[in-house]
Amino acid sequence: MRTFTIGDIHGGLKALKQLIEKLALQPDDNLIFLGDYVDGWGESAQVLDYLMELEKEHHCVFIKGNHDVYLEKWLKSLDINDIWLFHGGLMTIKSYEGYSETQKKEHLQFLERMKLFHVDTENRLFIHAGFTSMHGPAKEVYESNYNWDRTLWEMALIMDKRIKKDSLLYPKRLLLFKEIYIGHTPTTRYNINEPMQGCNVWNVDTGAAFKGKLSALNIETKEFVQTEPVYLLYPEEKGRNESPYKVIKKKYS
Image (cartoon, rainbow, N blue to C red; front, side, top):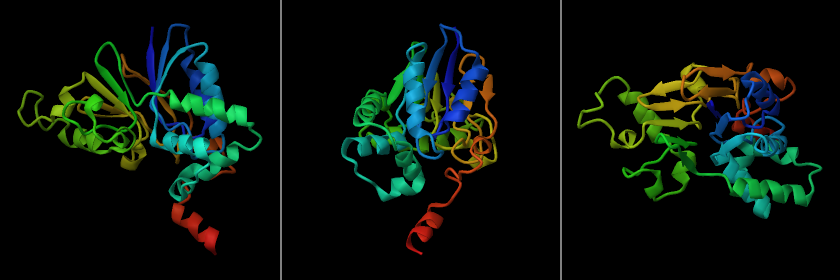
């Protein structure tokens, strides 16, 4: 039995299919998705369709990302948030053209049952972004931190190899779990296109929304599988590579 955790997909269905094919899944393999399935490339609705079918044949855990929260709100009330539009939401809305209300309701139900975080039997945490409570994510005061927090990752990077684990200065949040797996912050921001490690935190978002690849990390061996750069699969689209400010300028010019 293998367990793979998969980084942010951002509407890249072609990359997701390529990744699953490369994994050559066995019936007893586990898949833990770290969120942000939508917003970016032009097949966000279709990514959700694919994942809903995938879980019928494999054990899957779906963590909810901040972009998924935006979509959930839109499907509930058709509320359009301008910030969301400028960060991939427009392409997501377009991907729903031709979808019936019944299909949209199924997607909403799928999003609503996603987890904010998951802890496995080995005390490994899977969460989209992070948490700030010294008592762990279950005691988090602000639910948005699950989807948005970057301090956990930034702290892990700063502390990595600088302070010993038994030091009183070692961050208490990192001692709560054997390992922590996150997405949310693309490793390509650090000019790295592979999963990164800081202390016991693994970041599996390798920039699929921009010019990076989609990655799956084997949590036991730490070996990873990647697609080709996702933008190459969508040559007629810009994904999230186009600045929101350029979009705004086009809208009002």
